[in-house]
Image (cartoon, rainbow, N blue to C red; front, side, top):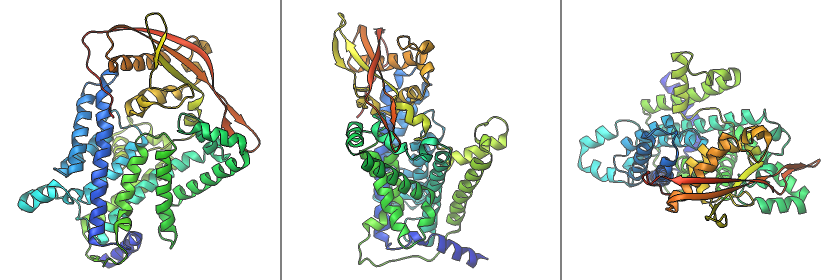
Length: 491
């Protein structure tokens, strides 16, 4: 029975075993850990700096984000790495800020770094553990050493299945969305400025070369849908594995260069480094030192990953209400917690709600006492492009995206543009307050918001956003309290 299990596991983990040697594996895991630590520090310290402007957040969030940034540094230098990783997994699972798709991918990445003992490579832990054997036994009692082996490849297979679970969850929602079924999602996303950095260029392309632009968008959509749907299956084909790797790299780079997706693609790059970095760092003439020994704990860890992914997808397809009603029983709470720990959860992104985010946006200006404009607040520009403030996760996920997803009657009282709802006033006031604090203003400050609207234009083969037009203005006066918590924006 044990031999049969090993044969199955060797077959399933086979795609991760080619062109592997000890040095390339260690380099891939070490680089992934250092890179992830830098990304987490950058994200957390930015959140920590502006927590005071969110009155609805518990006070512990600021301390938590400070600890996350500290753990990011510990992860990057490899100091007490397992402790830092466990705290980060806890934070990315239970924090008030852990609601984005990027957090789901981050949990899978952090889990992999724990199980593959990433802290023992190019780190302070490597030095101290070589001096104190007891420290090594205590710190690294979980997981396996990063070296070419059946166990190592099996754990990477489990991590890949977890990521595939996220992709399949997204595809389940995509197949129920009209914009995906009609093939217009990419053309709408690229010509809208909320998610596209070069929306003006793509709108020009759609105007001048509509057929070519339509072909490009539909082709890219088909390739991406195929990649997400058959991610793990393709790994077992001769050329499928290379397609998976290179399409993943192309997708993540496009997400960083073209789209505005916050830290999501950066965590995906970290996961790809962990899974496939050894192929990149391995020299063609390197001698493989593959270990045929199998660690039973690695078998169970990989099996649990596969089990939770399959269970989640079955529940999502046949009983989705199970994932929403969390207070009905302890069993549901425990099950959903298990899904969350392994990065599984409903992924409804780039569907109708997201694509409608470009319909309205606000451009905010600081005014002097006479009502003259001093400067444009770096929130959105007149074309709806994101500016510096929108690079911050807290601003993006707790202010901007929830407002942009609202219906028109939830943004304007009785659908009268000159009368903002409480939700609209909250966003305006929060951004103005943040800006005034960052500019070190005192006493009364004055701001103006211009509200823009744009519509989707549809032809028989293409849907795209049209140019926007200003529909109204709002004004705001704030009296800054003398004693309030300092704020800063980083980077």
